[in-house]
Length: 347
Image 1 (tube, rainbow, N blue to C red):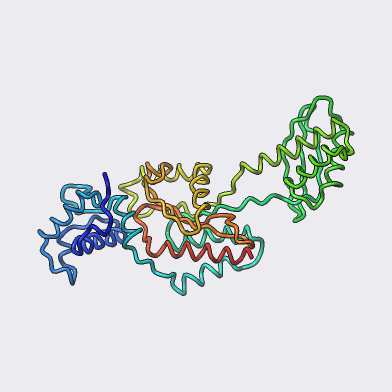
Image 2: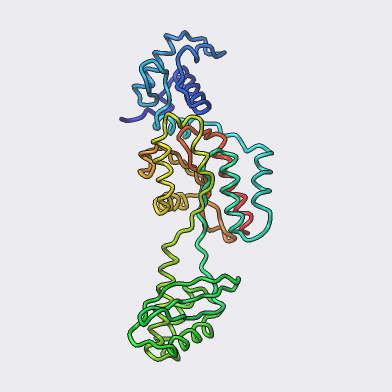
């Protein structure tokens, strides 16, 4: 079904459509013609309003969940409203203070990112989400610990004191002396570099025959750096807070939708793909219900905004996930302000 653009609706249809959407977003209850007729300024009878609502239903903008239950916006109707009619309100001074105070308490940027999800969840009554930028550690020290004849644990100490490890498959015939030689070489040659930089320098040294390693040690170093790099590249960091907010007083009639949404939140790889799409834009993005196949069953909405590093490059995404019945006019600028605040902290 082709949805009519907002310009094709006459003033009466636009007024009634706006009332239905805003009322539904505020209460979660379908809106009847009698309720609309009591509003000051419309001066329309319930019968006239019903006719207009029927026209809007035929256009695919409204739906009637039950025969006499009034109308509610469809996902297409919500999209039309958000894109063409919504008047976004700036975050209140209290909301701005809450966001800035939570994000500016000092400490590592990871703590600020986690705080962003918590404060957004609390203010929006949704689940807060943040896609954390991939941070490749800078090498301070490197070591290998033998696990068996065929595997070793590669241990990396970062310049920030962090310690991480990965399991590496060993080439045949690798002994303790080769493990030590390879580890000492990495620590000596690549301290102060990221893994990607270390790989590039190692390749250059090999090609120029400057790598002071025998073939067994060289293969071990190559395997260690490669498996670490590949692993970190496919491990997106996603923080989700406030899932309990998704279960409110209205979920008694909609438990299956909420259960499905909670299941979807467990599939972090899929959510990462959705948020990665939001990284490609320069402004806040809104995904409503089945517009994204991830939430086609639960009928949920995502509002997400990119935040930037010192050089202006998009490094992550912050936002909320909740039911399609969101106060978009309030939550969209709230998410946008949080992204702007995070960007300032990254500089």
